[in-house]
Each structure stands twice: as C-alpha cells, then as structure tokens.
Amino acid sequence: MAKWMVSAKKADFNGIAAKFQIDPVIARIIRNRDIVEEEEIDRFLHGRLEDMHDPHLLKDADRAAEILHNKIEAGKRIRVIGDYDIDGICSAYLLLAGLRYCGAVADAVIPHRIHDGYGLNNHLIQEAWEAGMDTIVTCDNGIAAKEQIAYAKTLGMTVVVTDHHEVPYELLEGGERIECLPEADAVIDPKQTDCEYPFDGICGAFVAYKLLQVLFERDDTPAARRLLQELLAFAAFATVGDVMELVDENRILVRYGLRQIVQSGNCGMQALLAANGLQDKKLSAYHIGFVLGPCLNASGRLDTAVRALQLFQTNDKAEAAMIAGELKALNDNRKDMTLLGTKQAIEMIENGRLRDDKVLVVYLPECHESLAGIIAGRIRERYHKPTFVLTLSEEGVKGSGRSVDAYHMYEKMSECKEFYTKYGGHKLAAGVSMPESNIENFRTFLNAHCELTKEDLEEKIHIDVPMPMAYVTAEFVKQLAVLEPFGNGNPKPVFAQRNLRFLNGRILGRNRNVGKYRVEDENGRQYDMMYFGDLEAWHDFLTESFGKDACERLYQGRYGEGDAICIHVIYYPDLDVYQGRERLQMIMQDYTCGR
Image 1: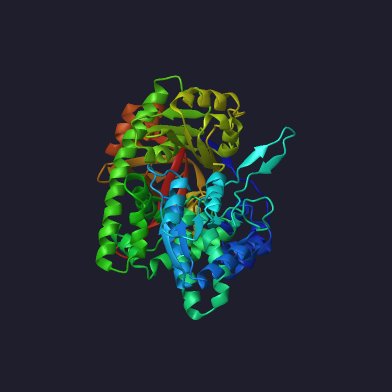
Image 2: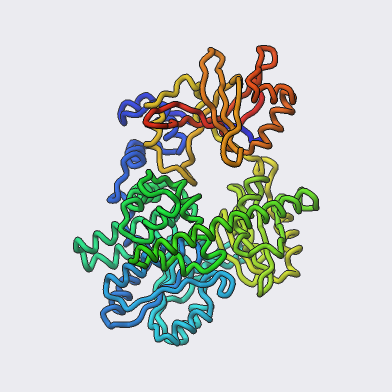
C-alpha cells in the first residue's frame, strides 16, 4: 500500500481566496504546488502567451535564425531530422512548416526506430549530402551526436542543433563536469550550463517553436502570426506527449495549445481527433497523453513515424482520415503487445532473482524493441523502482528505462558508460544500446551504486486536503478547473475522507473493470463512489480486511451495522453529466482500513 502524506504548507488561504476570488481549498492546493507570491499565483491562474519567456535568451537562437535566414535567401537546401516519438514528429512538422513558410527549400526525415536508431547517424548524414542538402537542422536530438556532426562538417555541411536532452559530459577527477558539445554551427538546448534561458524544462518541439519565433521576427505579418498560433498546437501536443512538467511556461503553452488543437486548421490533426471520437469534445492533457499521443508513438514503434508526419502534412481529408485510422489501429495492436510484454516482465521479476533488486533490469529478448519504454513504465508503476527493459535487436541489445524521483537515471547511467555502445536521456527516462554480454554487469553495477533507500522506493500519495465529502458542491468541482491542465508536475489534487461505510456496489463496464458504490459518511450523508483502478487488488483487500462474506454482501446490497465495510479513502470529486443533468460523484484513488 502507498504511504499517505498530507501536505501541510502554510499561507493565508482565506486572504488568497478573497484576492483571487477562489475557494480557500483551491488556494491551499495552489500553495501545495509551491506557488507562493501574488505574481506567481496570478500567472498560475491567468498566465497569458505574452508571459512566456523571451526566445532570444536561448543560447544560439539568434545565431541559428541568422544562419537559416541566409540559407533561405541563398536558396540552399535544408533537411530537418527529427525523431520517431511524439516530440520528434511534432518538432519536425512545425520546423518544416515554419521554414517552408519563410521560403526555404526544405524537407524532413524521421529516422526508423529499428534501422536507424535514435537521433543522428552517419547514414542519415550521408543520405542528406547525396541528396544535395546544404544544411541539417536537428530537432529533439543532436546534443549527443558529437561524432556524427563532426562527420557532417567534414562534408562541408552546415548543422543547426535544436534539442532539450541532457548535455553529455565528462567527469574529471575532482568531480568537475566538462560538457561535450557537438561542434555544430549553432546549438540550441536550454540544458547547456551557459544558456541564460530561465526554464530548461521545455520539450524539443517547444525549443523548435522558440527558434521559429526568432526567425519570424523578420516577417511580422498577420499571416506569420497566424502560423505561429497554429503551430502552438504542436508544441503543446509534444509537451504533454513527452511528459514535460506542466509548470512555468509549459502550463501556459498547454492551456492555450489545447484550445488550438480543437480548432486547428490542420487536416491531419482534425482527422486524428475524429478517429478517436474526440471531435467537438473538450480536450484535456489526458486525451493527448493517453489517447491521441499514443497513436503517433505507435507509428514509430510498429511501422514508421513518417506516416504520422504525413498525417500533419496532408491537405486531403480522405487521405488524412485513412492515415489517422491506420495510426489508431496500430495503437490498438500496440496495446495488446504491451499487455503481453508486461505480463512476461512481471513473471520474470516475481519468479526470479530480480525481485529484491532496487534497480530492475528486465531482459525480454523476444519483445518488440519499440515497446521497451512503455513496459518499463508499467513495471516502474507497479514496483515503484527504477526499471530498464532490454530487448534483442539486429545490432545487440536495446532498451529503455523509466525512473522514480529519487533516482537520476541519466547521471547514474553515466557512471558506467563502458557497458554501452550508445545511451542518452533525462532524469526520469533513458535509452541504451549494449552488447548482450554486458547485461548482467550493467544490472550488477546499477544496483551496487544506486544509493536508494527503502523510503526512496516507497510509493507516496500526497493528499492536498483532508476534506470531508460534505464540503463538495457542483460549484466547487467546476472551480477545480482553474487548476488545469493537470499532468506531470501539476497532478489532479486529491482529498481524504475517513471512515466511509460502503453500503452496496456494482461492477460496470464492457470489460467489467469499473466499480460503482454507494457510500455513507459518519453523519449519514450518502454519495456515489466510482473506482477505475485494479479491481482484483481491491477485492483482495476487501476479502483480507473484512472477509469473503462481507465482500459478497456488498455486491448483493445486504450490509449490516455489525459487519459494515468501513474504509478511509483518497478521492477526487467529479460531476457526472447525463442528459443535461449533473450529479456529484467521487472517484476513489486509494484506500485503507477505517476505524
């Protein structure tokens, strides 16, 4: 069970509520997000596009814009090289659209996950050179491509890097880090130590968008402003899809970008919404992260991400609908394959020697290499441990890692570079290639040097407010919307209620995977409670805590005072709207025995 922790940060909640015309509970939630000063609170609640940071503060943004302007003026051919995930696809599209608007002779290439691997390689550079390209612009990659960019320079090519990943470094004996930057003509990455940009948590597409903002200053026309407005949708899409923290300017971008996605004039974006039944719906970050985004990722995992790029490039509605349908079908197939791979990983952990490891390294040689990251994420969620899933590829072993807050995955991987042929990533996610013979050494080293404590590996749920359900009204639920968009860095707030009696229940859903219950507080008030989590684990808890008979009576509606099921719950309030009528319901997030 997770450890429950109540946030107890202090502030004048009533004063904040009065000044900003919000409920005191909303004021407390904002304080729990470490938003303290009045200016910060105002920006959190009412941030505008004008409040985003100045793109000129990005190191080399001005230089890159100047280079590209001169290349466009000279009619030189430019190739954009992206990546095969959501961020790489979106950044490639928006750079291509922006460059072509400026008159560039430009095209875009998305590497093939299996044949090319991540980022730049000499093969892609050679192809660009043979195609007569003068300039390469990377997006969502390039910062770690020192050798490949050096090769491009030997061919006389101009290279502009736009990226957001960690900058590779060498660690000197005294602990000093020396950044290993590629010798490109311009390198834009907010994670460079000498970059003055005030927020380094932006995705690759947002970095590319910032470059276009600088480039477009030479053509400050209504048409240029309209295109930048349109491209906001793709920067926002990538920000959520690449699981960036929805704080600072990311929050502003996604709030405006969600609206722009819905009203987008991009034929492919509209087709993607329609294929997933989301046209004319209010869009949230959840829809990008769990419905739309995975369709783009599936193209890069099981086919080629070029199809996703083609989706955004086409102006033909019939073609867009066809491609969007293909991507959705690929994603449905990906879900089935992911379930199988996750099941195999769990069996390996439970029945082998990995169970006691603090850093899990799971080798699934027959798993499709593109699913390693998703499966690693599922295993990380289940065991709350840093997890690598490795698969067998044509060129050795490839894999992806997903981490927990207490473990900086990229830095820890950097301590044993000798095991890899290639690696890269962030604090919470990474990719790696290595010889199969190094797997056990890799696992042993990471576990011997992880420095993780038992507390680090304990799942924690931070309760915003221990709030009785009696406080919840329809108006309060609607006011929670001022906290959106929710996601990484700004989770949905959760509340706690003690000693709820569960009176009766039903199992709902096509797959019978949703529980609906009638519950009662200590003052006799009753509420609807929904549970969308692991029903099998929930029923095991009920049986172990209250007995099999009590569990059966719950679903039969035959409860008694002496054998009532009494539980403490963490919940989120919601409004169920059916045929125009609103009804309060509580969504159970976690539970433990009451009394």
